[in-house]
Image (cartoon, rainbow over the protein chains, first blue to last red):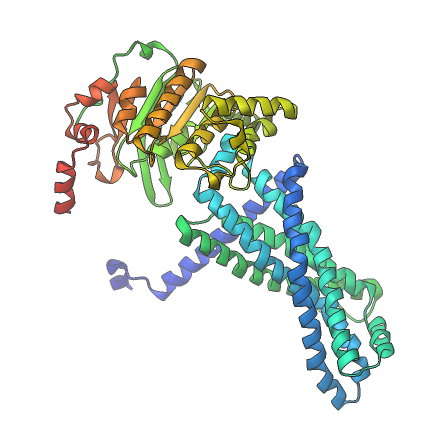
Length: 278
Length: 276
């Protein structure tokens, strides 16, 4: 120990300590950034000429990529589920398997993942480039608050529009599952929709959409935070974009788990079905 | 240790519009400025010179309130900046125009929108009034109104600087900061920018702070010169601010660090590099 101290070589304890301290600093910094954004939300709403282009970029331009990936996910689910269900002569219930998976989990998570990849990375890179080229300083010098001008519109666009994108992923995924199941694998159209209807509750749809709003908020905050803390040069901008996706993806999965537990318990409490899990 | 030369200019008697008092600035573990005190007097053109990385741009951003110092006090009109509310900061910062090193034009907007940005964000002017102001500012920097439709990526370095200057002047500021206004420009365009700085000074009676390496700019525009030295090469207990005086005094200074810089002589620096 004393040798390590004198030579300055870090021991495993030092390394773990440094990691823990860095993690706490990062979480603290992200939380402060979140509160700054909330502060910006309390003030004046973004001007429409600032908000609309961001909403168009986040909402409208994300539709094709989310629709295509949703379609394929629905198709893959059908192919993968069909053989297993047929072993038990339950292939007529394939609609419920595909559509419940899509509405409760895959739709929200897929839409959020695509948003983190397509929009989150672009946000981090754009804001990072603005930081590196002093455009954020220029905003301040011209009397605009960078949080209100850059972060708040992106936060609102992700928060408001991800539910619509989730519904697009759900709908197109169902369509993909229906095409493979009914048109290719020969499952009855009637039973496909009948079992879907029986197994999907309104709560499933609402909870999926609600989860997506948390994902959207996390994606925008993480992407903008990474952009504001971007290192210098092209390498710094690239790292900010990569970090944005990696951290957003981890946040989506962690939030998904937490929200599933919370929402399921709420469901059980409200409708008195079983005992709360945790 | 070389004593800091204080100017003999009559401007001394005028109250400072901007002041840094015992400023230390650190970025993480890296200290960039140490115990810097600078005053900028109303109506003067103060030029900050020094080697790359000595903290000139950081000093300017501290003066403009774009950065907060680690230690020390920034004062505007004799009042500490930290005592101002967010609203006051916002209002007072609009008195400043800032020409950034790379112009820092907003990529997502065209030239017109860049110049109009401050007016749209901070005034209730009608669109046609904003259009008139933007065209007037573009004309002042020698650009036609048609340039307004262009994107920053379509502009040459000199045009970007001129658009940056038009944007900085759009709100009719009292103080204009120029961060390396002639860096990367050809000699003719550098002189055009110097001329614009002089015209702005004489037509608008503004206070100017200019960061530059260009001694031609120093000779043409400076009322007073301040030289900073990189902290990594300043001996302990020695000041980082190694010269303060008129341009003429800078060219005749006794400190070899000042003379080698203003004359562009690498001798002493090369010896240091080889010794290292």
